[in-house]
Length: 346
Image (cartoon, rainbow, N blue to C red; front, side, top):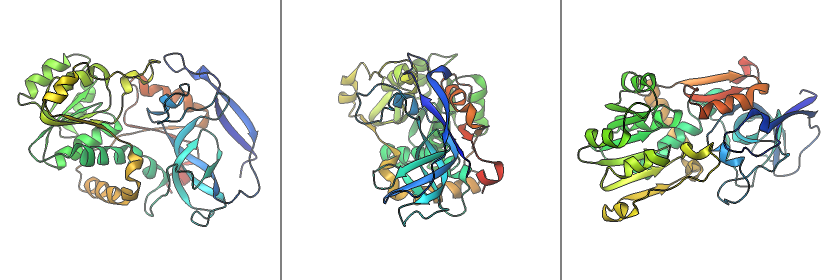
């Protein structure tokens, strides 16, 4: 174990766009000794940069997601190895996925209701947080359980070139849907068509989204998987088919703007169209993660899911890498590896 525990502290709440200066890098002594009952200490190996983390930087006020106190270490999804244990279910050496924090060593309560799962055998740390981690699992349960798609229907996915969106779109193709992806830029749209097999795309940077959806979906959208919110969500609502389903996965359009996301302006369309709009959390389906990983592995092995990973290295780069989520600079699942290469792929 290292004698130092590096930490990224939230020193200021972002005012609009998040800045690296909102964080402070500290070096404190590494924790030593035993942990209490019902607690484990992990050494973090890799972190996922998830858009929802931007919400956790805001002031308290929404009881459904945490608010990191100023002066405390930033929370983040992570994979790590147990180095001290007060819970026999997670002995020393166990590889786990959990909500950890931007530091080398973190103490995790095992009975607090936080996501905490031992990584399945056969998955490396990077696979457990990337290819078969939170984002693909979110896509799987959001589309199949919340969206309830039926073969032959039309699925539209916003943020379709992202990690969650591209997986949801490709699962839609596997299930026999006609799939349209909304993404920003010609390159991302080409990747969705050429590598992911989508039937059509809408480039929100170059095309009027509502009009393009109307042209591509003359009978309406049956399932809309939304990662973006804002005007993209509004455009989809205006093009929903009767009895359509809207899956609310994320609202990234507003995360880094310092404001709460807004809902659709024409709620009567939802009423008259008998349209269902539902949010969800991946953790709602924790008891079925093994089922989802089994399916995802089989589809990947069969070449039916294209996957892109944007892997960065270095603990010192965490805030700067995270910021690329909101500039559109990342390409795929955004990970920061803080352990050596051999261990991360173990």
